[in-house]
Length: 114
Length: 116
Image 1 (cartoon, rainbow over the protein chains, first blue to last red):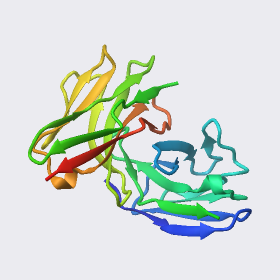
Image 2 (image 1 turned 180 degrees about the vertical axis):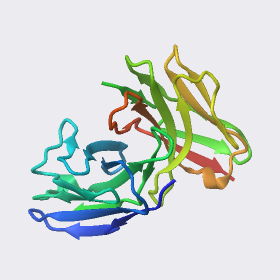
Image 3 (image 1 turned 45 degrees about the horizontal axis):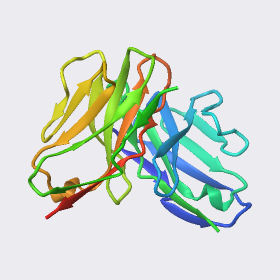
């Protein structure tokens, strides 16, 4: 498995502001991902964080709204920009290592936008 | 695009009994992975079990086992000897084995209640 930490664990933000979420892994991993879990819903993939190149976004998610950085193989950030109440969700990072296909998740960041 | 369907929003089982959670998926691919994840109220996603599509043998992990029916595109999770700590949301997930950096596609989840 992997030890993954996320900061902050939760935050309450005002609409129109931005929040950057950090994801740190205990060892180098090739693949890192960001997911969103809206209240009472399942997880939806936002993007794949690529080291050394732009993130790959899923349909419905754009770089201007969710810019992602991946400066090295153990760290990534997701920024939620120009927030609205609809952005209130849990944001989770995950990594894939060891056996192919297995993803391990961070503890999530609970974001509330007022 | 792949889809994952969990048709049981909620299931309830008595402690020590066995329960089966259902999952079906739709894909045109022949090689892929399937997973069950558990999310307790702490919201931490925990990998329960993994199945590779090219393997006919059903995966097992202690009290957890799957019934993988590739032709029917069905992937159910059986929990034996249910324990109070099994209470959680359970998500079925699909990942392509195409070799790219693919994320997971999740079902909507099943809320499992354990009755003491």
